[in-house]
Each structure stands twice: as C-alpha cells, then as structure tokens.
Image (cartoon, rainbow, N blue to C red; front, side, top):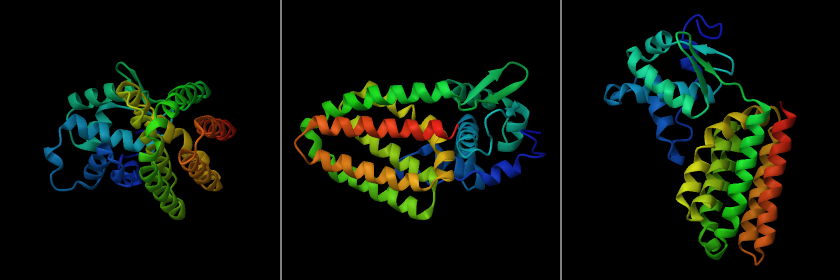
Length: 251
C-alpha cells in the first residue's frame, strides 16, 4: 500500500502524461509509454522507465508529499526488478523529489517553505544576470518568447495548470539559455521540476493567476523591444517577487 491506496493502478491512472512533450521533455513521453504500456516500452531501459513513472506521478501529485514508496511496490507497478528501481530512486533523490531510507523506502519530499525561498533566490540570481547578458541580442529572442506566451494562452484556455507552468518555465529557460552560460542554463533547468510542483496547487486554486502571468510575460517581451535594460531587469525581478507572494500565500 502506498499513501493509503490499495494498489498502484489508481496512481498510474491519474498520471497526466504527454502534455508537455512539445517542450522537449523526454521523461514525460517515457512516462506516457509506461503508463499506456505502449509498443516499444520494453526497449526503454528499466531504470529510465521507473524514473519517468515516479517523477510524473510526483509532479502530478498522484504521489503527494509525505507518501512512502517501497522498492517492491514500484517494481510491481512498472513491471521491473528491484535493481533498476534503486537506480531510479537515487536519481530522484539527487533531484530533491524523494528522500531514501534504507530498508524502508523512499519518502516523497513535501514542498517546504525553505525550498520555496531557496528556489526563488536561485531564480532571481540567475534570471537577473541573464537579463543583462542577453540584452545585446535580445531581439533574436522576441519570436521565440512570443511563441511560448501563445502556448501559455492555449493551456490557460484549457485550464491545464501543469502545462501552463511548463510553458512559463520554457519562456524563462529560453532567456537564460540565450545568455550563453551553459553551466547557469543547466543549473536553471534543474529547478524546473521543483517550480512546477510548487506552482500547480496555487494556480489550480486561483486560475486567474495565469492571466496575470501572461500579462507579465507580454510586458517583458515589450521591454525587450525597447531601449532600457534596466526596465527589463525590473520586470524580471517584479515577476519573481509576485511569484514568491503567490507561492507563499498557498502554503
């Protein structure tokens, strides 16, 4: 039993997969293949199948914070041996999604206030730095960022909070990536899962936050088409501070 559920099938059925594949998330596609037992699933390495399945279940809150997952139950759920389960859980621990307890299992980490503060601090440091670095080639970004905003609008109309946040993250990842520092870009991308898990509950409770976010992103695009890097940096900081206020109000 995991989190009071008699079987893993209900959790499997609740995992929403494939919605963000257009953003290049290969893990989401693997999770879809595993859940649907699609043709070719056996060709995917066992550890990758377990990793994708558990990660998707955590992000979709099929496995909420505080749930203890055991190797045996996950092996049965995905149809693999325990060895690849251990490998997958080590990866998930490295990403901060679970905490391993020898001979007991893996505890899904709840989102704590300090984690929110740490992620937001990292975002501000990286994004404000990127805002200045990208300024000389800012106009090359406008078309890409406009596409991301249109994707966010599509998800807003569909009421899909998770995909909306994936689109939001893709918007900011494009700016950080264009700044040209591969180490900072990799660090920023590693925050994606944490940001999505933190943000989805609040947006589901208050969908109007998506409209406010779209407006903020449009203002950033307009600033990129202007002549003031200070204005652009101010908008980036304001957007992060507003996200912080929203996140803390739902905890």
